[in-house]
Length: 143
Image 1 (cartoon, one colour):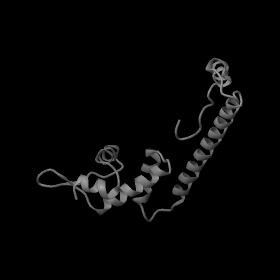
Image 2: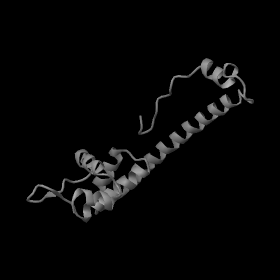
Image 3: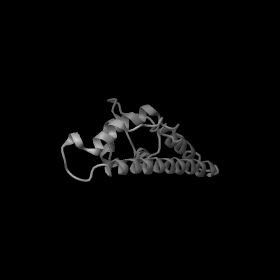
Image 4: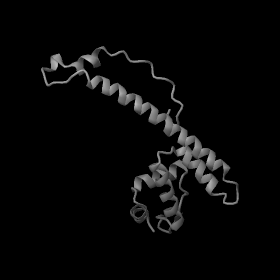
């Protein structure tokens, strides 16, 4: 199948396929005599795998590691478990950050209970005088 057909079957864009090829996540396909890319079912399966990993917010590095492990079907899956445990830790850290953000927003929201002139709005005032703390070093895969 051609790249457009692969994109349709794998429910992604042609640009995404080319990007994954460039990043080494998707193997370069064979070429026809007319120099068109020719893809097969293994490409569809790999793209679906990548898409599913991205849906779980995995980085390209994590996906690359999983693909490398997937290409060694007789190896022990301990490294896969470790990678997923690390990713779960990243998700937990992000959830904690988002909960703190929600608390900050809720405190701001409490500063304005009635509709009034924007010059008297407690939210705007709170945002103007709020002391922001230095962002703590992130220990997640997002940096």
